[in-house]
Amino acid sequence: MRRDDACAIYRALATEYAAGKEPRTFIHFENPFQSLILTILSAQTTDRAVNEIRETLFTRYPTPEALASADRQDLERILHRIGLYRTKAKTIKAAAAAVAEEFGGRVPSTMEDLLTIPGVGRKTANIVQSHALGIHEGIAVDTHVKRVSRRLGLTDHTDADRIERDLMAVFPGACWKMINSLFILHGRNVCKARNPACERCIVRARCRYFRETKGV
Ligand code: SF4
Image (tube, rainbow, N blue to C red):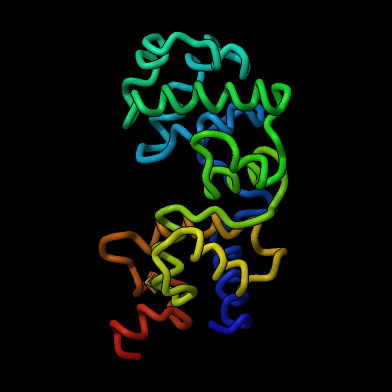
């Protein structure tokens, strides 16, 4: 897709969702450490489920040091309503230990350092950077961003890292900050996984899926 078309899509979605200047956060957190841990926990579960355990988790374990030395069974009890809770209990303990031991108790700010933390891939690192640290070094690619990007024709890939590279190549850096929020909102409201509502979609004129399925 040409950059002009990509920018037109961006402007239309930004206007539609009145997203303002800050990325929309779907997980509630009070500091970068909470953002990091909750984003790791959010894999394969709902944001709502993660938000529901936040208070209990961080009242009991408010710092990286405290979480690193948490009792595994106690952690599993707190997390038991979210998917893969046993594995996640182990992972967030290891992530907290890395923050405590390798970074002096502060969540690091660079992509390179974030990727050394157990349980952190580019999506999590991008979300923590963007939402908690105000850094926009890349674009977080989740299931909504992946689906909307592929349908629009912004990428042909299925791998999140390659999709991110395609998006970073076609959108100017100034757009990176909001792409994740806008595509999530569009994916949840209109471009749903099953039965996308193309007839009321404001970017259908530039959408590959619409062209190919509606024959326009
Ligand atoms: S036209 Fe349809 S497939 Fe394309 S972005 Fe809109 S809702 Fe999604």
